[in-house]
Length: 603
Image (cartoon, rainbow, N blue to C red):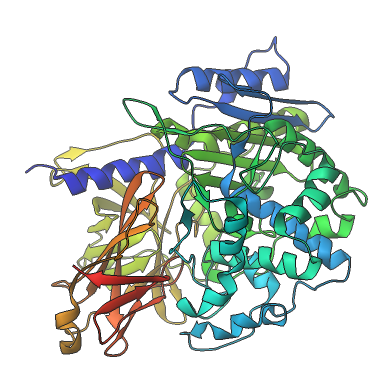
């Protein structure tokens, strides 16, 4: 028995995603120096983290809620150097929408087609059509496709005028995608936020860059921030990649400007947060007090989201204090090799922002480190200690809150295959409490608890149990919703619902009309900036069509596998609900595969 290259790839990806992104780093509480102030302790922790990594540059902002702040960049830089902050851009897009509502230019519950009539041209593939509102797009619950992959990345030589042309051409390309039922499950959509950016242009009669500069950046004292590239506002700091040898990566330009193109400096983020926080208590330069309250509050959400809560569009992160929920808000951003996280306590105006510019395993700890720093500052200011519930206590708490929980007796009735945004989940069980779970291509044994199952990672048929800090409390929970079984994978550090919900899928016999359509497809004019490099369609022994997607993201090659079933002689539906799921693809009579804006030819 040996590990083949694909298994090693999955193992590396698994460790990167689940350990480094979701699992907590060493607590600052254990390393605090009583001779230093709260901010100095946090700053020292960031420096220690930087010194132990191969990251070229780290930018940071610390605000302690007492009118004190620190910001800076570690590593060699030039004055005004900007970091790309990816999806944190969505916070600024949301502020622009709220500003326009304050001026009476729109309402959050207006249908999007009122401003973008092209939205009517999207194919609806769900069961119950309904008008999609601006709020639906803001909370990632519109049923809209996650992305329009074709031309998401652009040639770095492109000029700003052509970037804007590609961006503004998106409404005319909506016929190349589809949407499903709204408000069923969270499905993160860059495409949705790009449409919101175009809406801002239509309503304000300004380009998205001009609006951001005049109504947000200038008002917040953000003198070096921009959505575009060719500007006299400093430079975008280079990005780097590599595990053993760190090299400068190629510049990344994206079409979806209002979803993730913002580049900025730590000083600008500090100024932005201080300006924004004024609106907590009174009308401020960026938002009125009522708009800020709407910005951070929990929005209506499907029950399948469980702990996954949204503001507009802030993610709401939970801590527990005497068994009561304590809320942080914020957003992460990744435009590899750049990774960033912004999180704050909306009650105390305490905030942490971290950004790094190097693609490495260590970079994945940006998010948990920022949360750890925020915990430290909040606990110091309020003289409290957040509860440290173990996994059993957490699930008992959740089971009393969500009515879909099953009290565990056996996984036997849940045996089968489940499609989830995190990948295929397979449960092999019998009438006893023993079961094996295959998740992202890796095998786990299970141990039964009252409201969940512990997942224990093993190699070599279970002969070598692996205990990795942060994964020892990985858990699977089972649920019933509308008499259909659902499963979820989470942990103490991963909120229930964050990785999506697994929906049971049922096999069908191979369709004769699709036998000749199996095989590999690739874009006829593939370039290094093509996001999709290849699609392979085959039929497996378990009764499903496997839709293999090979993608290239900023030099990273990523392979994803979805399950699909025919709904006609030319159209298949990707199974499941959530990001990249529920969408259709077609193979026409000429043998051309149509998916997410691509026309792909069989190899």
